[in-house]
Amino acid sequence: MTRYIFCTGGVVSSVGKGVTAAALGRILKARGLKVAIQKLDPYLNVDPGTMSPYQHGEVFVTVDGAETDLDLGHYERFIDENLSRNSNVTAGQVYAEVINKERRGDYLGGTIQVIPHITNEIKRRILQIPKETGAEIVLVEVGGTVGDIESLPFLEALRQMRSDIGRKHTFYIHVTWLPHLGATNELKTKPTQHSVRELRSIGIQPNMIVARSDYEVDQELCEKIALFCDVDEQAVVPMVTTKIIYEIPLNMEKLGIGDYLMKGLKLKERRKPTWRTWTRLTKETRRKKPEVEIALVGKYVELQDAYMSVKESVKHAALSLGVDAKINWVHSSDLERDRSWEPVGNSNGIIVPGGFGDRGIEGKIMAAQLARENKVPYLGLCLGMQLMVVEFARNVLNEEFANSTEFDPATPYPVIDLMPDQRGVTDMGATMRLGLYTCDLRPGTIAVEAYGRKRVEERHRHRFEFNNAYRSVFEAHGMRFSGINPDNNLVEIAELKDHPFMVGSQFHPEFLSRPTRPHPLFVAFLKAVCNRAGVQTPADNHKEILLQN
Ligand code: GLN
Image (cartoon, rainbow, N blue to C red; front, side, top):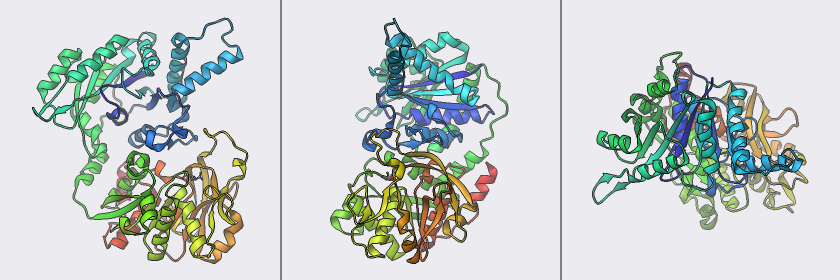
């Protein structure tokens, strides 16, 4: 019988529910159990693919090509399992499904209502997960904050699950925030008490409260929360903000949460958790290491969540090489406005990540030029690859007006163009080239050297591609197309011949990087950065982490 752990949030949003759920998943997986995680998002968009990153942060892409919430990235990095499109359910999907059924006549004669029709559809989607994954434990995180109007149907569905599948098989965790009052230097529990009261008024009594805080939480405070919110003292878990998120499962384990959960769900552990790799990982993170600086030239840099997986991938790769990587967040529009390299500063490497729309494009092209001319290591991710190609056309092939047709539909030199199957696509939602595609690597290239394999599969999210009409002229001038999709001959990786590391990928390698398995392209890029910075790296360090995993 599958067990379900439901995580709700209280007091404020962005309290860290996603990382909490991911860390709990790791704790259970460490006991040999098969774990799956699902995120329920109460907004009405069908998926976050059509939302601005300013609204929502990064769009994480799954193997099967779903555009999902960035929390799925945390889940995959913590539990190291590939999740599917069913792992992210939005209110938009639920309503669309129910309304489609109604139009088909499936409910003929009936009045369609939030309860039971919407709640049943939510439950159906939760119950689908163990069928699809064989998971013994499903962690379900509900987005938003208790008290939001739009999350009510989701909370009602979770409440019903307790009676549907039984008390023994469900466990409710409420993640809240303890505000700190500067004047009296104390943490306050009242908002937590109110939030739990709100949750109870919906019919859910939490089994555990995770109390997030920027300050140490003392025992007395935990006792107070336990008393007012009617949970065991042991089940009040203080979770102090840490810069090193991969420490969270270890901290939770120390507080005895794993054992408490197992007992609460009447589960037997298959093996004793050892935490060897994770302890090593976090010790290594804390160790003072030589630092290298990387400029990330993007459009949404004020909101770093928009580049969550890129940020994490840099961390993983740096860690595996025994260095710290500091990211200098550079606004591409600033480069464009000031026509100056200054914001890139002391950086010994440049990343141009993915993006859409023409704001700041010229600044990113400048960054590519800087990297090419000064032999600064450059990693272009999707749009970053496309702009590296545009820069090359303009400044090496002397085609001043070369561009991507995304930004100049009338360009006389369209080196990046809409993919044929994208022509005539009018709907914006879920219509890009999405998910896993194969890439064959050409011998003798930086790419094949980095991967150490001839064929890889990577995740995609784009509409435009390299225009193959220009392939030979690019090759004649020093660009190599080191990764090609074998099915449609699409360029997947481009790199420069006479450059220590100027590589762009049409796909998003950042979605595959894991703390204990850094992505080969990021590792190779970081190595080039270290070389330029004159920092020595124990070359095989990351392999060691791999072996211990
Ligand atoms: N806008 C570009 C395209 O659609 C790049 C997309 C991206 O960077 N994810 O092809």
